[in-house]
Image (cartoon, rainbow, N blue to C red; front, top):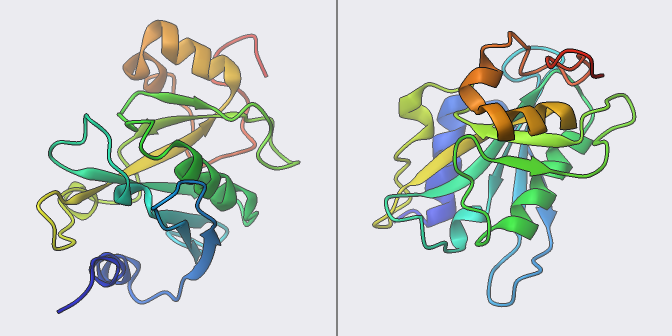
Length: 189
């Protein structure tokens, strides 16, 4: 019988079409919990992009996780691993404390890479996956895993989301993969 992690990786293998990932372990800061692993796919979904998925968030518990447990995903037009490593840092530091609900924002408080002014993230469904591929992932436990997308945003956009909501922000017409884009909120960089 396949282990929990083997089931999750088999699911990702099916989604990636057999693209060989790279694995980046993040040491645990939580007693009794294994570390988080960041699984990175180069040139997925297209050349010049990276997609990274965590494994380890769903090993923690949170009182709002009644029907499933999250793992995190990021897809950006960049080959800079800083984005994947930032995802792993967020996963390790915030698992069990952050419920990772759609519309929530994360203030990273510093630029992720030297070529981008973005310092924050917003959580929503991963744009690179179909709903059936990111929800209800059977890992052999009573609660399945659901993959949540993290989208890099400018701090002004994070503040806009807090005051106007995710739906209003989403309608501003921004590219969710472009880490070098200007802010979608007028008058800010």
